[in-house]
Length: 144
Ligand code: FES
Image (cartoon, rainbow, N blue to C red; front, side, top):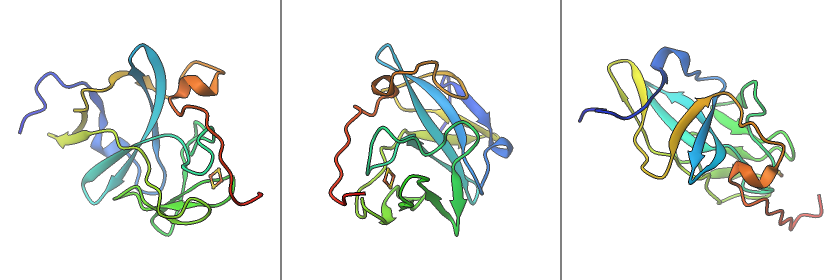
């Protein structure tokens, strides 16, 4: 498999195992955020919002908290398996982060997901949470 013309997002060495690297992607003309996390030589890429309150970002620009090998949401402490994206604990347990397809080749991480284009490393340039691609939905069954 070759990365061909797929955009290079980062060097593999730049993607942390104990935090995340924030990206801005183009989603049909709107900016949306995603995060990269390294997993034993592979890399996972997830959309940058919690599955509990989808207007809550996991990586606020300085890397998401990763503890015990899980991505933490800073709002109500939901944890996500970085391999599968599954919420393993918390108010959205059993839900999954939204995946963005990437591949690792020749020491680089490439975007292979046709639904998105690469814009930049770092945060989206918007104050509008809806523009982050989360839909802005806030559904809380916990009262928290
Ligand atoms: S918003 Fe993430 S756990 Fe509540």
